[in-house]
Image 1 (cartoon, one colour):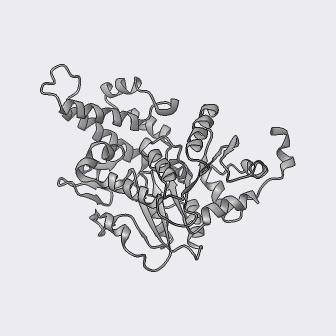
Image 2 (cartoon, rainbow, N blue to C red; image 1 turned 60 degrees about the horizontal axis):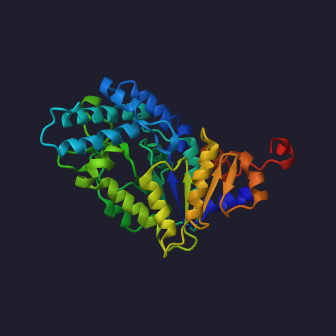
Image 3 (cartoon, rainbow, N blue to C red; image 1 turned 180 degrees about the vertical axis):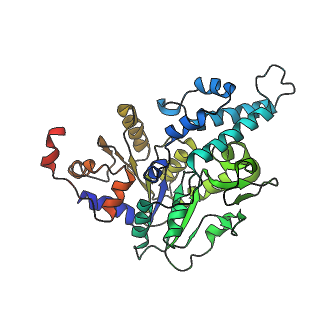
Length: 364
């Protein structure tokens, strides 16, 4: 019964999704730790020194995104000074470093337009829900696995752009009525490896260019930290995320997959939406185990307490937080390791079943 309950959260017609890097691991894409190690190798000596002195969030090791955040914060401070004689960096040097990091991210993530069989099975299952007129997919990933998988399936979808080879960002496309049924709306909250920014500030989606021509890659957090104030793509997408979470749908749900809740902007958007007086949003999140499981569980329980029973979290095989499952149900489902995207998809398509409690009784 518990696996069926989990499937019902996901397959409900009023469920939207937030997909993080963990869901792209099955497609061979690096997690943030692996991405950091690959990009870090090509940093300048000055950037490596800065990185070695950074703290990560929630007690984890710093990532390449933390470094870019730091550099852009430093850039804003430099821009406010009259003289820079006593500074190690110049504004131009920071821009060059950030652009080099962006190019390193693109190289590490890869630009091959290729879908994932796991993603295709997931989207095929969602599209099979006849009561669902449109499905909102919010993703934090730079890769194009989601878009390529939907295209392989020939499922109609929109991603915020108008046009084809030189498409331009126009958020109004998300408000246009769905046509053909079963359409997916994809919101790339952190940008993408196939987005570029023109000299006039227009964000465009283009086929992969040679590295020497790709100087204005739009990937998080550079877009978030200072480009957004001029061009608005990041803030617009985040606003659409907030708006969707607050929609007055009956049994409105957000299912979170492959995201560890380490982005403050995303976390605030989710928590504020749950706690809004007019909201009926309930969140179901799937977490893999972290290095410090006690700290992880404590952090998530504090979040759940603030959300007054409308935040549910499956944390590895360690704990279920929230009212969504009874204790007995959790005991039967935890060994399925549903925080792994491929395992969850197997449950949805009916290929993975709950183990018998007696088989695992010695490990409890």
